Length: 230
View 1 (tube, rainbow, N blue to C red):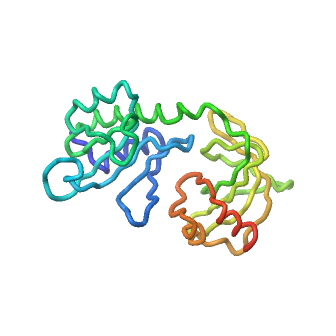
View 2 (view 1 turned 60 degrees about the vertical axis):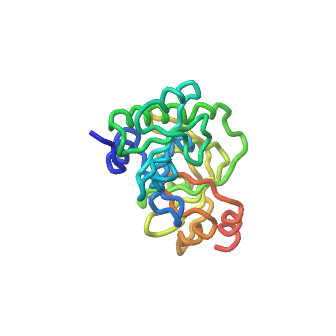
């Protein structure tokens, strides 16, 4: 069975709970696959065939994945594998989906997912700001704290701006502690402010954040707006 965009997205959602992210309004068919550590492990794109040297008109769906440098030459000998498009060619390869078996693509995805966090050995020590999606039923206790099941590597002191789908940015919280309970990451956060009304997501889009399917680092301009204008 040949791989398709649909089967790849279904596989990563089932295998890794990955929700593809469309980060660029100009390229709506580009879908980023993000590891829980925050790094990309794949990008699905539709590219002109001529850019791949295929010598035909039209476009085709491709998947760009990470690979170990020592495996790159071996992979490029396989049907459907090409040098990476717009990525480091020593660490990434491009797979043309219509030319590749689904099982082969799944193995490439598994390998890429495993490689994504390898360089993330040094844990952050400086707090930062993040925009993260959250459950609309979020509850704060009597001390204005909430335990959040969030995917991401947060540290105490991080400021989280909690986005509720279809409503907007609803809360600003500071991370108090991070722990793992039953294999699920638990982030204890203290409420700093509630935005009433919620801050429209268009405000984030003005600062380059077009989707919030997972934790997104907040640029200074958006941080300043959320802290001073709302």
